[in-house]
Length: 68
Image (cartoon, rainbow, N blue to C red):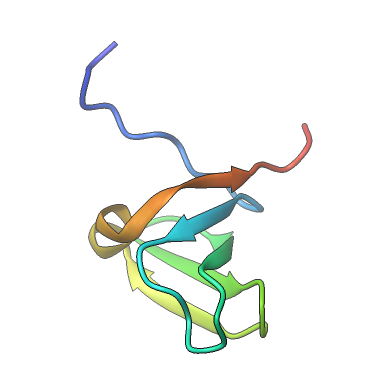
């Protein structure tokens, strides 16, 4: 296993981001993955689409994962 391996993010994961959304929360639900990530704010429901590279720099970890 590579030491630099990134954690895998899947649909439905709740992640903590570096900066909070203007509504006050920094928890986001992953709605779409690929070259871009579509995220839904868990506070107000606002959607954003950000490139994978920007997402990987800004994410601070998973808060919870969907049940398998």
